[in-house]
Image 1 (tube, rainbow, N blue to C red):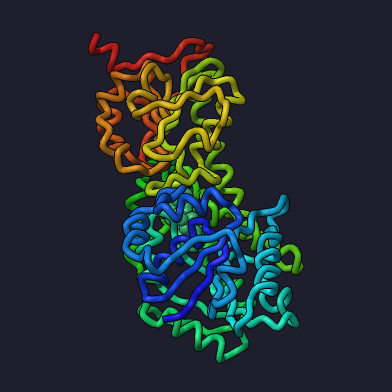
Image 2 (cartoon, protein in one colour):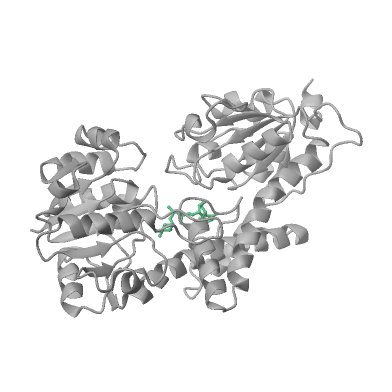
Length: 444
Ligand code: UDX
C-alpha cells in the first residue's frame, strides 16, 4: 500500500484516484476548484463516466479530496500530475498548469517522492523542464478513453514508464503491479512522443475511413463492408475505422495538432499530420454543404441536430461535430433545434438561439432536415416512419450510420449516410419552402 497524491480532480485525476484506491493505495487528490472538491467529497461527479460513481463509493475510505496542496503532498510517496494542457493557437500545448503543479510539488513535498506525469505534455518536458530540480519524474502517458475510462484503467493495453532513473521506473511499475499489462520502460521523451503518436494514429484511421467513405460513395460501394474487410487483417485492426462526421473530443484533435506543430518546429515533414486534420475539418463542412444542397438555402430552414457529445457514452462536448454543425447553422441563419441524451446544452451555448429539446423526436418536430451527429444507441432505435411523421421535410444526414439506409428511404427520406448509400438529391430550383417528401405525398 502506498501513499499517493494526485494533482488535478479532472476526468483523468478522478479515475486514477478511484482506480489506485481500488488497487489498495491511499489517495489524496488536490484541486484548486473548491466547488469541485466539495462535490467530490459528497460523492458527486461533475462529468459522466460509466461505473465511476459506483467505484468511488466503493473506495471512499481510501480517497479524499482537498484544496490544500500541503495536506495532499506532504506524505506522498508518489505524486500523479493530472492537469489540463490545452492547445495553444498554433497547436502547441499550454503547459502553464503543469508548471504550477510542479511549483507546488517543490514547495510541499517532504519525502523522496516520485512524480508521475499523466498530463499530455509538450514532448521533451520531463527531460527539459524538470532537470536540475531534484525531482524524480516518470512520464507515464495515459490512454483512457472517455466513456470507457474505468475499464481502460483496470485493463490497460500497456503501461508506459518514461524515465532514465531505473529505480524510479521499477517503483512505479510496482505501484501499478496488480494491473496485468505489458510495461514499456523508455526515456521520458519517447514516452511523451508515444502518447501523441498513438492518438495521431487513431485519428489517421478515422480520417482514412472518412476519405474512403467519400470514394465508396462516389462508386456506389458500401464503406462499412469495405472496412470490415480491412478489419479482418490483424495488421490493420478494426478500431477507429468507422466513417462519420469525423473525430472530436479533448485528445485526438489536440494531439494531432500538437504533433503537427512539433514536426514543423523540428523542421521535419508535417504533411501527413496536417492532412489528418484537413480531412476532419472537411468532413464537418461536408455536412453543411449537403444540407445546403438538399434544402436549397439554409436561411430560415429548421434543422435538428441529434447528438452534442463528441461521441456516445460521454457528456463531453469538446470539439464535438454536433456542436460545430449547430453553431455553423446558426451563423447561416438556419433555425436549429438540438437534442442529446446527456450532454447539457448550457455547457455548449449559454444564451443561444438553438433550442434544446427533451427527445430526438421533439427536436425533429417540424424540421426540414435532421443531422445525426453522435453514435448514441438510442438514435439507432429511431423508427424512420416516426421520424418522418415528426418532420416537415425529408432530408436526413446520418453521421454514425445510425439508421438503416433502406428503411430510411422506404420511409420517404432523402438519406445521406457517409458512404452508406444515397447521394442527396438537390432541392428543386429556387426552393424557398421546405421540400416535400414523396412518400408523404403518397400517404395523403
Ligand atoms: C482517445 C483515445 O482513444 C484514448 O486512448 C486517449 O487516451 C484519449 O483519446 P477519446 O477522445 O475518449 O479517447 O475518444 P475515442 O473513442 O478515441 O474517439 C475519438 C473520436 O473519434 C470520437 O469523436 C469518435 O466518434 C471518433 N471515431 C472513433 C470515429 O469517428 N470513428 C471510429 O471508428 C472511432
